[in-house]
Length: 382
Image (tube, rainbow, N blue to C red):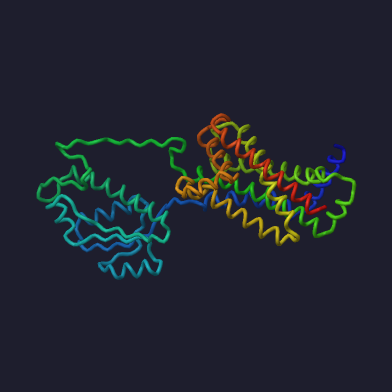
């Protein structure tokens, strides 16, 4: 125990003497959290709209005005030519094209319905779906207003089949969002981004720290001393584990006080999950260090593993939208379980009993990964 205490003290001294390492531990993760919390979002705040109004009537201008008044669509250009609009979208000058055909108002008055064409740049399928949803809701609201107003000729019109009219049964659907009533995308993304930041700190720095000693030759000197390998490994992992938890705590403070992310659940549950998760994250870093001979190799292997973890974690795309085989693979991904745990505790206020599956999986994965990493490291150093 005395030997372990001296080795841990040595590791802390080495870490705090390295200014570059301190920056990677504390400054870079918090800066990444601030940057990604505002940049990594699927929310489309505004889109450039090219208007092709071939009718030029008050009704067609009302459609354009309603879309632009919402703040979601900015009227960037207009003409009567669809060809010019297509060129603008091809050149990246616009995101959507609104085409109001000729006789729009006449058809609306005579037939009680009239089409408009809404063309979206669907290179980014997620953003295209969001823009279509915005436009549909705005135009549905405009149609509902038209259904209770009189147009020229004193004719009552309906803008859509599901608009309430006299003599027709209607269903009043009232929406209510639980856990994130303001639909703030940052509240959903920040917990996952915090998990990624802690993962990078725990995995990458563990791998780089041990490989750096391997390159310097000090690792071989330590291996010929009477120090037990288990003691040496514990002395390497415990300081990084504790500093990663400190980084995690600073990230939570930043998320709560600066980014406004709610913390509805118990912080004890959050830190318990973080402590267990970091065991697996550091175990992966130890395994990477055991198969790498240089820091460059360790960095490439770390980023390859982290990229796979990230894309299979459900951070950007929901796991339920993935194929069934991918969902099964995600069960072995600790990042996916910890991301679910963070969102459930911070946004829903979930407790330990609600998250028993995540805790069990994180514990099993951590023990398996750490055991395999220690055996691999011992085998390579014999």
